[in-house]
Length: 114
Image (cartoon, rainbow, N blue to C red; front, side, top):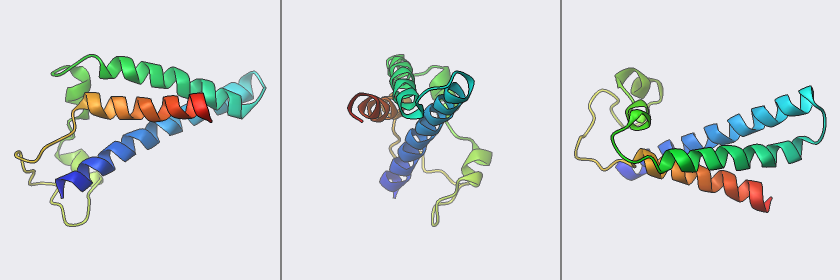
């Protein structure tokens, strides 16, 4: 069950990164004009590069402490069958570097190959 929870967490962070890139591309297109698709690709490249830098920072830093969801955040995003109040500390968790790196790879792939 922990694997599913961590994969959903990873997909959630990747989706959030794509939403931020899309919003930035739309704001750029509205302010300056031009092609939204080109702006989206550029936004994906820039945000992907920043996420790679954040992934390279390492363990026990502010990013890791921010990604450690508390009880309130866990209760908001409940997965059916998983208790939000009783975490299992022995369950493996993806490190923030892996989450940032996965999101960066997805964004850079879209920015370079789409």
